[in-house]
Amino acid sequence: MILKKSSIFPCLWLLAIVVFDQCNDRPRDLGSYQAWFNNPDNGFVKEKQIGYIRYRVYYRPVELMMLNDLDRNRSYTKTALDSIKATYGNSLYFMLEMAYADESVSGDMLRHHYADYESYAQKVKELSFNIQPYINLAYDSDTVLPSLHHFERGYELGKRQRFLFAFPAPPKDISHFTFTYLDDLFKAGKLNFRFDAAIREQVPELPLLP
Image (tube, rainbow, N blue to C red; front, side, top):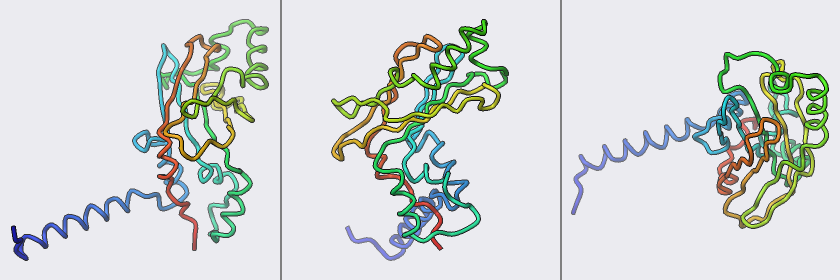
């Protein structure tokens, strides 16, 4: 079948609109860059709700971790960005967040669940120094424990509990990785959050080059 010129131009125009829209979806500044990763449609956030607690796991690529080291009022060369990126190594970073499913609820989650001070203090200590045994990451058939973790104590007056974990670098040929949390804190049991390993190739560039 031979297309006439009059039918070709509308097709080309429609293709140009699609390409333009896809380009516009890319984050253009550091604020929109962070928001892009928090959008569940992009595959970097997984969520479950058990009872009155909402569990979220965020896969944090190194480019996103770098925002902690960047001045949002200046531009960076590729060489400068590569130097900052190297400090994070090849580890995989994840954030585990536990929060009230009902955002209108206030108060410290831990105090709500552990009424007496002794139990409360013990849980805070355990979360700060000994949560690693309850966390692992599976790369296809291999399972590893976190190499480090950080507990963000006091975030929003206890309405959310956040933990940052780093895991050893995975093989390049894996198809997926699964973050597992054995919840002894709120007794939700074993929670699995599976990520497609292909999203590692979908990380947008930092919008910082001059």
